[in-house]
Structure formats: C-alpha cells, structure tokens
Image (cartoon, rainbow, N blue to C red; front, top):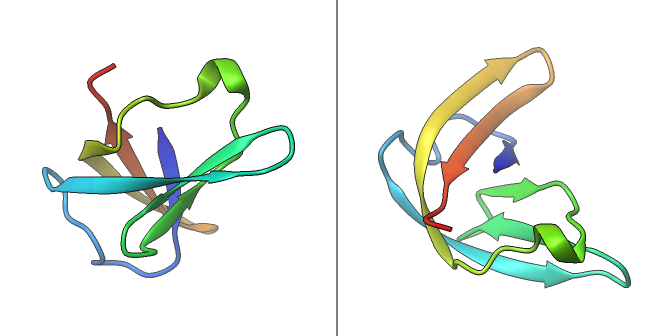
Length: 73
C-alpha cells in the first residue's frame, strides 16, 4: 500500500510502522502513526486487517514523497 508523506526522513526503509484506520461514509483510509503519511481511500473489499507493516520503499517525485508499506495479509 502506498502512503503520501509530506516531508522526507520521517520513516526509513525496513522500519516497522503502526497504522491507524480512518472511516469515511463509504471508504476507509490509513495513516502511518504518528501522522507521518496518509493513504488514498479504499473500499470495503480492499480494507486492511493489519495494524502494522514494514516500509519497503520510499519514492520521491515532483509530487512529493511516497512510502510503500508491505503488510502480512
């Protein structure tokens, strides 16, 4: 799963991170704690069961920093 991070060096590759789930009327979103990065919105069938994962990659492009987190599900 990919998360948008506003500043660099808030997490590192290989780091275990904790995830908090947020609820919208028809979707869910996820935040790397403590408010480091935020995911896109996901539907019910895409909903995560895990509350932690491992940072696999940090990407940077003209739109900002993106954190790729792998979960064990």
